[in-house]
Amino acid sequence: MATFAYVARDASGKKITGYEEGVSSEEVISRLQGKNLIVINISASSGLEAREGAFKLEPTAIRFRFRHTAIKGDDLVVFCRQLATLLGAAVTILRSLDIISQQVASRRLHHVIRDLMKHMEAGLSFHEALAKHPKIFSELWVNLVETGEASGNLANVLSRLAGYLERDAAFRRRIISALLYPIILMCAAFGALLFMTIKIVPTFADLFKGFNIDLPVLTQMLLAVSNAIRRYILIILGLSVAAFLLLKAYIRTHEGRLMYERFKFNLPLFGEFYRALTVERFSASMSTLIESGVPILYSLEITEHSLNSMVMARLIRQIKEEVRVGKPLSQSLEKSKFFEPMVAQMVAVGEEVGDLPQMFKRINTFYQEYTETFLVRFTAMFEPLMLVMMGVVIGLMVVGMFLPIFHIATIGGG
Image 1: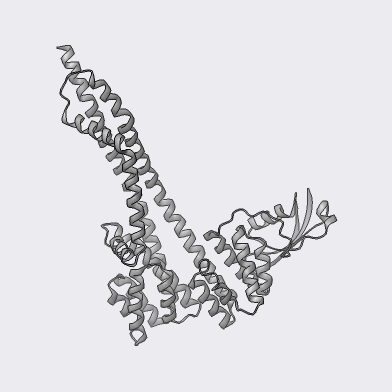
Image 2: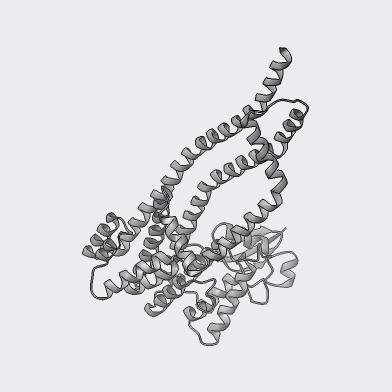
């Protein structure tokens, strides 16, 4: 066990120095990161690493192990927050990227950050370097950073972007968590029914063969379904996979994707949920962009591409044209019929008082709460409904299997 002296910065950018015991510098760095500290440098005051010399965070001396290879959403959130913190503490951007590159959990993100540094050292600006990696850094990233560079306020812009990414990631986690239980319940129910159909029903079928009796219609139907599934299970699975792949390929086409989105928005009950999710993302993007100083028209253009929705892209293009000729944004939103009147009214108030970002934040909060409440209610309703449906189906199967047995017992008793 060695003692390490470290220099780090907290989330507010405050410089912190101290000592920490650990087996290696990697362990100490990991522990400090767990305390939301960004390590600037670290050196061993005793043990083997003291003899090797102080461990500086240099590009050639990456001594920790990457926890994963791919770039996860949380990796980008942490990267953005750390970069905002370091820039806010007056650390140069190249030095900030150097420090972060040696502490990221993703191997690929480490290489991406090193590539950003190479492009910047070659003369590109930060937003131009980000644009070289469009699959990782969206237009929202690139345009916000460009705005921050132009205004000389990159640290604050990145801080807002980090806040947006953090809220979006937390919201997605809550949505996934709420949907996980119904999905597991459906899979368990389907598995139980499939097991009974393939394994239990044939056992009764063999039993009935020994008796020369007319089977009830329900029993005949169950046996027919069981035989069909067992005989054609591979064909059924193959056709199901083929249908899924064909549908997926069609949805990737322009017409297919548009039809799929329209289908989602027009679903009974869930249509409003998907609409609310879309408005939530729209309002989150608009509030972040406008608050960072991006003009409304440019904010609409960036949001159009960041939502990944063809229906919304068409809608936003229409709204842009109306705003471009001088029509208030609130009137354009109301005319679209996609947004509820409440949204247009709140935007109108924001335009009137000159505080659109705050109004979009309130719209975002409202729709986050709406979607979460919807999922809570859906889960509460879905569980008993699913249990009742399972009970009915399994009950019919049990009745269908035992009716002939009762008939046999009656004949035997007579």
